[in-house]
Image (tube, rainbow, N blue to C red; front, top):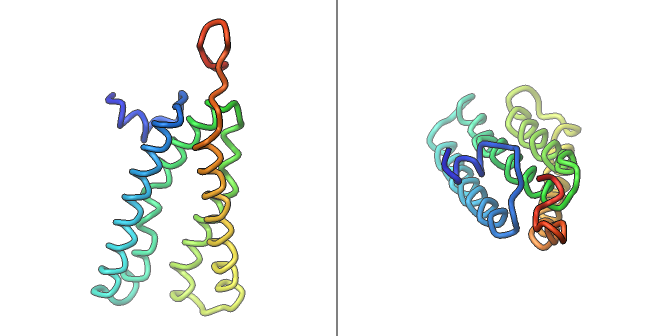
Amino acid sequence: MSSWLRLFLSPSGQIGRRAFLHGVIVIQFVNILLVWGSVVLNAAVVGLAGQKLILLPLVTLYPTICVFSKRLRDVERRVWLQAPSRLLLTTGLGVLAFNSLWTSSVVMASWVFISIPLGLLADVGLTIWLGFAATKRLPETGLTAFD
């Protein structure tokens, strides 16, 4: 498996700061393209199919989990530390996509306006912290603690 495929499709292992930042930049670029594409397609497609296009950025959920998992292992933290931001963003996008289909509830709309900004704030904070966190290396061998 090539290094790029392993970076985005395998949650095991560890990566350094540079590989983490490369992975985050690629994922964010793909997310921007998907959001832009869903907005353009949503203007062209009306109805049920158009409303569900907002879920296109969820395509990058698994690669994001893989990249963040590797970096969290590298700084000796639990992989589940990324769960709150992923959960908030995923449920917020899901509610946003299906809110106008089933009901226009104020409670559901308020959940979108709370969960997406909180999820983005948590995700940006985690990304910045992992981007600058030092790798935990064992002094004698040069290996990480998980090798």
